[in-house]
Image (spheres, rainbow, N blue to C red):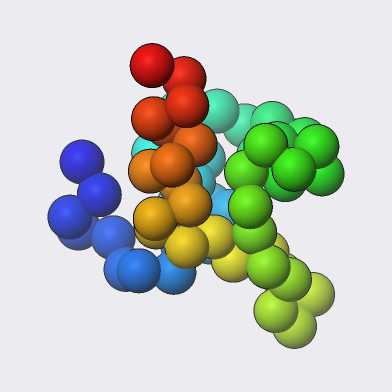
Length: 58
């Protein structure tokens, strides 16, 4: 599922993978459900953090 993506994902990548809107990604980040770091005014999400979020939903 994530093999074609880099280790550090953009919010756009996360939207594509989770099939949700950018607004939803920002809500997940702001509620601390999805860990992300802000780099130069843009959020970056580690691939492992996205996998961890996906595993919580199971």
